[in-house]
Amino acid sequence: MQDAVSLRAALVKAVAEVVGSHADELTALDQAIGDGDHGINMKRGFEAVAADAAALCAKPWPDFLKSVGTTLVMKVGGASGPLYGTLFMAMGKEMPENPTAADLPRAFRAAILAVQARGKAERGHKTMLDVLIPVAEALESGIYETDKIAAAAHAAAEATKPIKAVRGRASFLGDRSIGHMDPGARSSALLIEAVSGILENE
Amino acid sequence: MESVGVVIVSHSPKVAEGAADMVRQMVGEEVPLAWTGGNPSGGLGTDVGQIMSAIDRAWSNAGVVILVDLGGAETNSEMAIEMLPDERRAKVLVCNAPLVEGAVVAATEAAGGSSVETVRQTAEEYSAR
Image 1 (cartoon, rainbow over the protein chains, first blue to last red):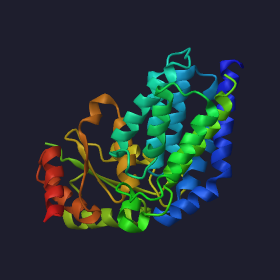
Image 2 (tube, rainbow over the protein chains, first blue to last red):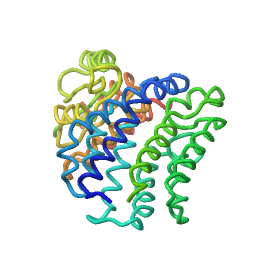
Image 3 (cartoon, chains in turn brown, cyan):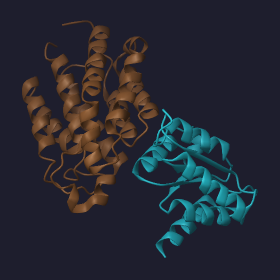
């Protein structure tokens, strides 16, 4: 166990690193079925979070999560800014100051509902929700083993390949979106794996 | 009676500025008008902070309508509206209409003193023709 400030700092570092090291891959996925800016946009957003880490991590969990969300909203520059921003902001609204593991599934589910409303999307639309929802279900069914959660996230991202997109710019491609992994699903799986890796020892 | 304001949000600052030029030439100066385009690094994209500032520049007590181009412009505009002060939030509406035509039609309707709901409806009906 580490203290909450160090834990928040470790989480920020892990998510910024995973987004940074996969930025080119995310951009390549987005070039196939979107507008090719997902990697660079996410990198800009999470770099801004990392740059402000000291101030952000000093805040208690609810404010920390809300501030991370606000930073993403203001810095990402594409639709993923408000979507990921909303995810973090909504989690911040649901989390108590001293959360336990039991708070996670509830807060995560509430955050997903907020993302669904923001993006006007449902499960099966070839979006980040196709990763987030199965992860929420795993948490709700009491699965907390971090390797299982990460594996579920990556399998769910993989499963977006055969789906025909109905939301976002990928939907303009119609059938041509089939066969490509959704970039938002991929970034969600990467973030979940990074967060799981840090929470493993908590 | 103040006219409803019009905000134009495009991924490209050139598109946004060009659309605003067309509104000015076709409708004139009486409608509050602002445009924004580009992401926080200056590339193609949209920027929530800049959209909030454009809403402020085009502010009217009658409300503001926003015309957007593609996906992220709409999502970021909705986010910007949500981050406005309570007393302003309900008076700002995103139009489901083509950017250029929608902006001209909305500004024309706004110049006649219509409510923010009517301005949005007119812009959206035009696009449905």
